[in-house]
Amino acid sequence: KAGVTQTPRYLIKTRGQQVTLSCSPISGHRSVSWYQQTPGQGLQFLFEYFSETQRNKGNFPGRFSGRQFSNSRSEMNVSTLELGDSALYLCASSLDKSNTIYFGEGSWLTVV
Amino acid sequence: QKEVEQNSGPLSVPEGAIASLNCTYSDRVSQSFFWYRQYSGKSPELIMSIYSNGDKEDGRFTAQLNKASQYVSLLIRDSQPSDSATYLCAVKGGGNKLTFGTGTQLKVEL
Image 1 (cartoon, rainbow over the protein chains, first blue to last red):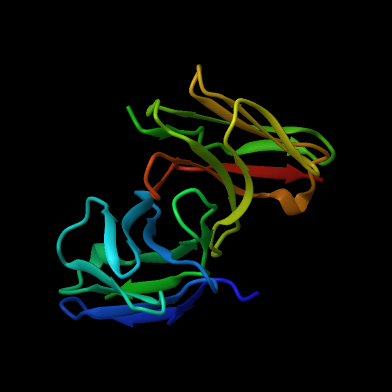
Image 2: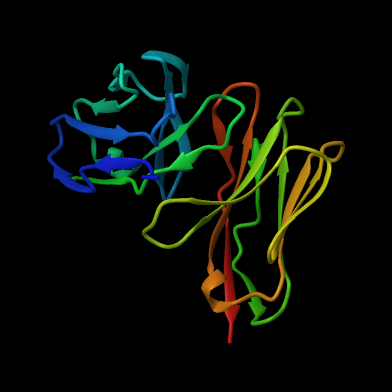
């Protein structure tokens, strides 16, 4: 059974640009969450989608957005990139609330 | 007060010893508790989940939960050098959001 797949794995962007990251959850999983991991702040929750609806949102500015498609695949977008957005972005999936959450390998974003 | 607290370490133990990792949480409505292992440059990997008070064992790993004390721990028996990693404690409340501690770095020395 394939795990959570994230693309791209590594990318470098310039300040002010925008970026879109993609996530394919484990087959059958309908909940997709996004997390940001930085050395200073640790792992922080960005948002969660379930059945194409945002169900929960963390404390991040509006530059961070996401969406989920009918096949449960998800994308997150960061606009007007700042140096501080450099981080590992992790996608996680689960069947629903009562189930275990599994992480993908992450997308390493460097903003220069 | 942070929502989930862990000692950052590093925690150094000799090979073959028991490593004990601890975590406290502040939200009493938390329902599910997880331990993830993260190697440097890699994503978190689920090791254990625990939902009820008491102990849960899986191979060399034992998770312990005490909801009254808002405390969860992970014991690793017969520690191996390959266990050297950062261990993240995560707590889930009523929703599907995980709140993580900052992680404890474990070093298993030969």
